[in-house]
Length: 328
Image (tube, rainbow, N blue to C red; front, side, top):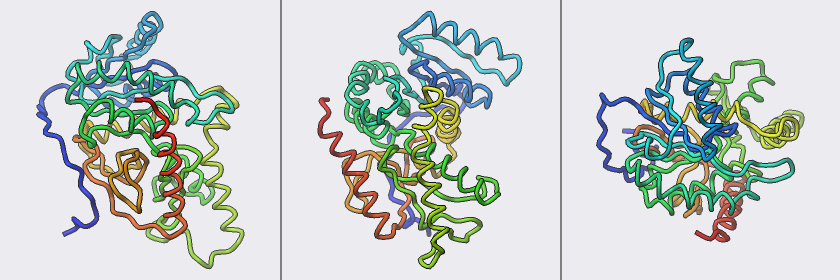
């Protein structure tokens, strides 16, 4: 009855044993990787978690620290290892990469992080041939596209954290202004996880009441723009003060992994391969999509107003211009 709401992805033929322990791998034990590991551990998302990093001494120390809190949470087996130890994983989370510095955009990181992917992806595909691949490293949209090309995996099985965090920031700031719980508000950031991201104002609503109207007051428009600017610049502000972001992205990634591992079929703004939408194609960016055990199974067929459509096309072109400069 509701099939027209979605565009389906071709789904991979995965052989899933429902009785097998749920296993995930985090590649990169920096601030983001460790925040992901900690959030997933205290929320009991996985039965087994393998952390992989080139700095083995630090990695072992971090895993020891996590293990020694195990008596306070539901049990999870946590290991420091290599991709060989990750064999049979359900999901591989890539947080490895050069960190974004103060004054540096996410897109500035692109080629050096693509080079890291070139070394990682063959090992991942060899040892975890049926895993869902989740990119978190920046620039996440470009790296998601690169990982798809380098891995040869079906497009449903390669996704990026995209604007899940941006959407969370957006909802928090809007809800804080209105004095409501962020979970009671439906609003999305789409497009690039970065400077060209797009506020999906036309569909933002609370209890079915839309926030945006053509005749809304100038003060309200200004408040909405202020909230979006705070959303877009949040990472820059945090990096300027503490040098990196980690806690919120760790929680965002945990939500994505839960949707995958528990087959929640949850609508999230993950970065995924776009075949054709509003004239946009052959690029990865964030749109509302259904995330479950097979990865990105479907995209929501949403509508945009003319301004949002132009902004999404600009965001896609920004990413496409960068992709065209990559040496795979």
